[in-house]
Image (cartoon, helix red, strand yellow):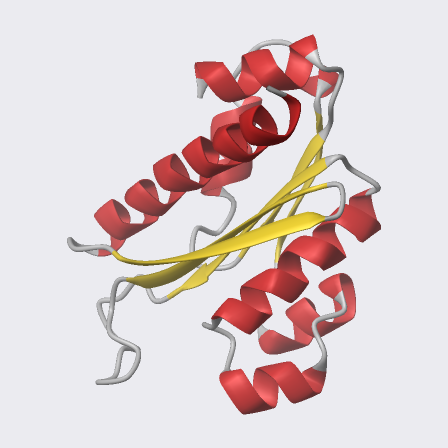
Length: 156
């Protein structure tokens, strides 16, 4: 987390979040830091498909074909968050935190974490173990690390 804050402030960058399964935990973690208003633009919790479509412009065809928990949806969530907030960096997460809602194809713990910096979008898939709280916390921690890595890779 400290690395992300340092990269954002040192490079005068802004960040926004688009969250589903974490329900705002990533935004909360970022804004728990004093001075976060320098770099944190906004957080959007888009739990429903309708919200993903309306606020982040995730196409209904993507949601219908791949589902809310998919690499494709995470990709569009990042792009939508970057555009909506006019931010330099975005984090988007969608997944199944459990304890219910999983299936053989999409088990509990399946999470897609998208990060974006300007025109670059990366999406990573994880299957985290643990209860609902643990899965959400692991998702939050990993998302913050991935955002820092992306900035570091692009700026150095």
